[in-house]
Amino acid sequence: MPFWVYTDPAVYRLEQELIFRGSTWNYVGLEAEIPNPGDFKTTYIGDTSVIVARDEDQSINAMVNKCGHRGARVCRAASGNTTDFTCLYHQWNYDLKGALLGVPFRRGVLESGRKVGGMPDDFQMSEHGLRQLKVNVLNGVIFASFDPRMAPLREYLGEKMFYYFERVFDGRKLRLLGRTRQKIASNWKLVFENIKDPYHATLLHVFLVTFGLFRADQKSKIEMDDTGMHAALVSRRGEQKASEGTVDMSNFKADYYLQDPSLLANRKEFKDENTVVMQTIFPNLIVQQQTNTLALRQIVTKGPESFELVWDFFGYEDDDEVMTGYRLKQANLMGPSGLVSIDDAEAMEMAQRGCARHEDESAVMEMGGREWLDEDHMVTETAIRGFYNYYRQLMGFF
Amino acid sequence: MNLRDLRFEFEELLTEYVQCLDEGRLEEWPEFFTERGVYKLIGRENVEQGLPLATMFCDSKAMMKDRVTAIRKALFYSPRYLRHLTSNLKIIGQEGEAWMAQANYVVLQTLQDEETKVFNTGKYVDKIVFKDGKYKFEEKVVIYDTIQIPSLIVIPI
View 1 (cartoon, rainbow over the protein chains, first blue to last red):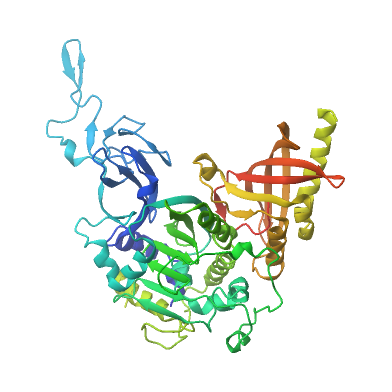
View 2 (view 1 turned 120 degrees about the vertical axis):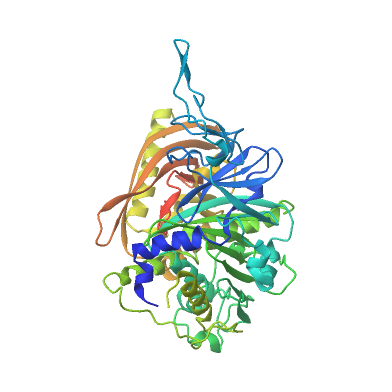
């Protein structure tokens, strides 16, 4: 993998056009965040600001947050409830779908009995609304696409990935527990790689290894969709004890016990035997299912060497207090202070720093072979190879 | 004790608390709390929206000790200097045995090879009790404005 994919501003700009503003589905929020008509939130697709709003007719709409007039950002609030959007500069007014409703002085102004100014007669309101995006809501999760002819989300995921998606998004009403955010000084693709890289998990994350939350020697597998752009790392939690598989992990610490084990108190809540599913959905979403701590991690790109990772932690409306308690405690493993995830932020930044001045050199990703196939173990970089196989074709790099 | 003397005690407590963190004496951090003390580091956006998810959450001294052990033994992070500045301490009331107090804070962080930057700011919302001859936190909720955290937060605030 040549290092310039992580550093070149021209590649970054191309990605914004071909990937984020291209034929992809991008996670933008949960229905539970905008439950009532008029509710809205602002977020990003790549680095494009977008508004997601629920209309009076209950439909969910997404639009680019850029005035049809002179490109100013229209909505400056992170969230709220409104009947319409008005740009502060010249008061151009849009409805909850983004259609242009009003332009002050469109028909000019009366001055000494004479009409002066105004827009030309052939000015069409319908051509100057906020750019509307295609929206697909799947079991309470909202996705948006810049491609008006984008195939349905379920098709985009493929049946294998849809199975893991539906594991947590099964139609039950979701409850947003809260949000944390971190700005990571690395290229956005490194976080994608990180979650497609079960090879590192057992070597870097002492916490994971020591408490048997995830180990190379436990029953696990990695599956991709047909294109290689999405993947799921699936595993089953074992117990804390030394075994042959742990000898290779220099971070294993057999004498490390929690003084308050309630951190890991949990309840089996899903039908299958898996305890961890980490799903990457191209291009901006990671679905984290680690025991009872569930989150959607949204990637917001901010240049070739920076991105914001937004963690939306959720549960279900029918969770009892005990389950909510488990989720809030297990959340200590995740996020910007996560007992597991802190290592990842550090590793990504260190990897990015290493790229500078070496753009013409390459990273080696041959663990597990040179092909990209589903595997039933974790000592592999196959999902990363799958991802770049797809990326290369999409970007036109050969 | 009058309010002025109490304020003095709480200023001392706050100073000792932040110095403990700045000087890396992490093992002393849990000792500022009661046995079932609560420490919650939570973003302002969640508090304002009434959402419960915290970035760090411990509801016992033992859980705090576990976090310290993880910091010492399990986590990988680059070396840094931290410096807390606190101000605007105000006692706002009483709830049973506990005094309620708030203060502002700023944490300045210096990473290796970099200049000092404002890392995180917010306010402390504390419940303080007098136990075993010392003032301790029964609860410390750290509500931070800096919701877009630069990289990561490993040392508690």
